Image 1 (spheres, rainbow, N blue to C red):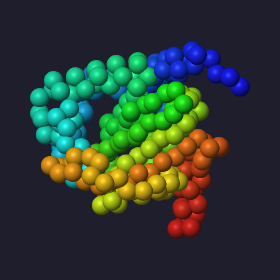
Image 2: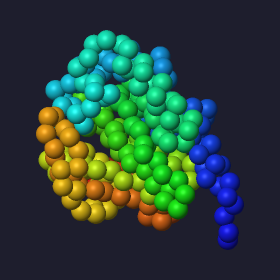
Image 3: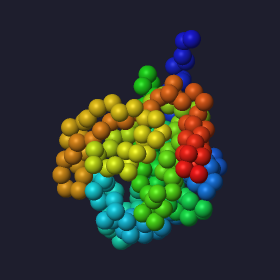
Image 4: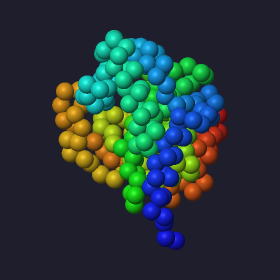
Length: 222
């Protein structure tokens, strides 16, 4: 079927989805659109988790780990919302039982013949180990694939980051190779492993598959 020349504009308009639609929910985990008024609690979480996040976070002045002033976080929230309106990013706050637990962003969205994106996420150490990020990522990817119209999502992760690698491996991401010195993190350039998932990999949806995995695990250990 021949695509309309307006398809790209329609797809980009879907960037509004994270600003106008209700939260994505798989209780007690949910994703909701990031808001400017999240800046204060976002700042507090990042400062409190600085040592926890330092080994894995890109060294970028626009993603402060240690700043205590509110201004940079307000600016980042506004930038993320603007990019969402432009169809370039899908920025969410991750909550657990209604509490701010971290952040997940589908960014670097490319439309046209690629329809691809990169995912990044972090979690407050206080909520780690509860399956929060795998559930949030499953919610996000189902939204990306079946509502927004993306085809492929990549995650690049340091080889040493075992916890983050387990997240994507549990969800069935393919390991596609090593990218040498691809990101500047904690003061130096580091290699990253590229993982990817396409819509063809999850015809029945990623969240149902993740729920089934969790249930099977509980039955085996119970």
